[in-house]
Length: 289
Ligand SMILES: [Zn+2]
Image 1 (cartoon, rainbow, N blue to C red):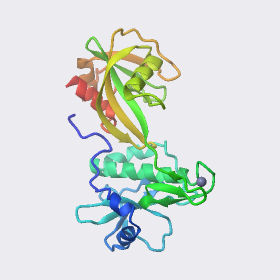
Image 2 (cartoon, rainbow, N blue to C red):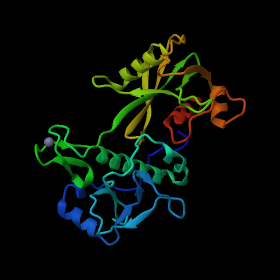
Image 3 (cartoon, rainbow, N blue to C red):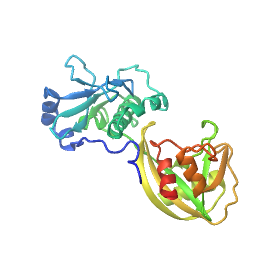
Image 4 (cartoon, rainbow, N blue to C red):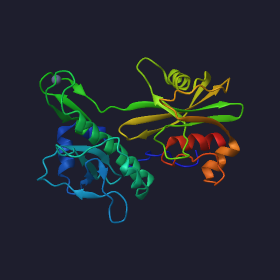
């Protein structure tokens, strides 16, 4: 991997020991050095220098605090739950155009905070009994005061993979992609299947190819809203494609020279490569290296 994976490398110690100790959590919140991440809904607000914005904890703000972690100087970093009625569209990617303003480590910290704040905003009520729930564990869970059920922020595993056949790999595009843009195929892991089985099923469903030798490559969070992208490779015996056009608008096999041209942004490349925040780009770089 030539570059760090997107949304990884946050610098804070998550400090689970503070989440579960009410006294120490209160002390962290009372620390005059404590900082709170400034969000607009779940989007970050760029600071003057272009990075994330932080502010002192406002004691008049009664929104619940979530502990993001502590830095090397033990300074606590928090984020607050979203206001009731705040405009939140977890699948909106308008924030994507602002992400280049952040360092990789800031994007990682923001991505986690975004997923967490978004999850709380969509899970105010108990999935068991339907009554309101409250934050606990320093903001890393919700507990129902009525039936005592505990609920934890979800992470949705998604397999994203390059099938390889005779020196070429398969890239595809969905209808909503920008013109010329192709990426690795991907899909959610379903209950009852391994990662290897999910890779094989998705490639069969979307492209009509049978694969074997599924191998894990790398993973990264994708906070839209809370996916964990699990990058894999697999080997296809037969390159004949049968596309599920409800999922995939087009797909093609590309060789290393074509992938390198796309990664370099060459005018003559057969497709536009995914951006560096996307693990698909790293899968292509890793394969073409
Ligand atoms: Zn309940």
